[in-house]
Length: 472
Image (cartoon, rainbow, N blue to C red; front, top):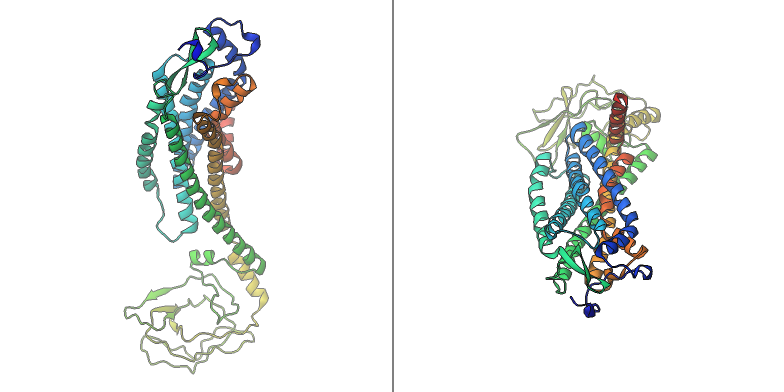
């Protein structure tokens, strides 16, 4: 390239006080001094990324129960370990040899690895969001299991490789005019063969489109997740305010709860619902069976009600469900073609024979029982853990999106000629190189998120640290 062609070539303009530089080594030295803060920052990222993500793999992979979220977190950490071990050292090398980059092949290989790790992390975060969505918004639908997660890694790796393959074409050595007559350098960027074509711009636009599409998908999924979580929290607050038992608790424990309009309140004892299915299922009503100690209804049963169905045993007149001052139970109808039978010891009641209970139930007994049902410590802990897992997944995804935005914006503006990177020097050059590699923040931030929000992770790390320091 002739010096007179500098207006159309890529030039690194040097500060006026170094206009006497005569060798490419001196040009590189001047640039290196400017980029020392960038190199130090990347070195810190390298140490934190390798150590932090290795701890994530160790704790979530070997010290915690093998669940879908833990496996996905380990996979995400492995991508971050690769980024920290391979991509960050390479970018440090690019900054050290800013105008003296030695090899086109190494540039292609490491940029491929960089793109592969980023794409793999992006698809893994999408899978984490899908798993969270199904667990929170579709809890009764088929869920993902560990075998599904392991199988899903095959398409994730395939898509990551396919997206990364063009990196071999759009990255390589670029010839740099140093603005000194007859002095040219080399850097790791777009190769000269396609540097002035539209190919690099198309590639970066496609990458940005993939990133934007997955970002929209993540935003939609987490919108539904957070909305469902907020709805559940509001219901929990209402139950706590009015001292109602949680429907999730009663359904999971199979403990009878007072939910139909025939019962205003009732005292519930610790017994399980015994439900048996009849072979001749009817279509109009179903029959319920309540364990003899299931309800301590403060009421007496009217023995005058009779039924001709031989499958049911009439309640003897002497049998009572103890009461205080309530009205008698009204059995005014007969169960027709029952679907189910609910057994109260050896006696049977039909759905049509609903017990009409007065509102004057003993408040003290009811409140004590309802409080007992609604304050299950194990289920409350499980609910808090599920909410915290969702928050962790959301924050990891948010950091990923925010860390990649500056990189994609600079890449698109660079190849659309809105920013001329080769005209930068001083603080501008340093800032440009930091924000161009802003995605490294994603690789080092996740261990801090886990350490703050996951008490098990932080305690395991602390235990490991004490073990290592005690040995030394």
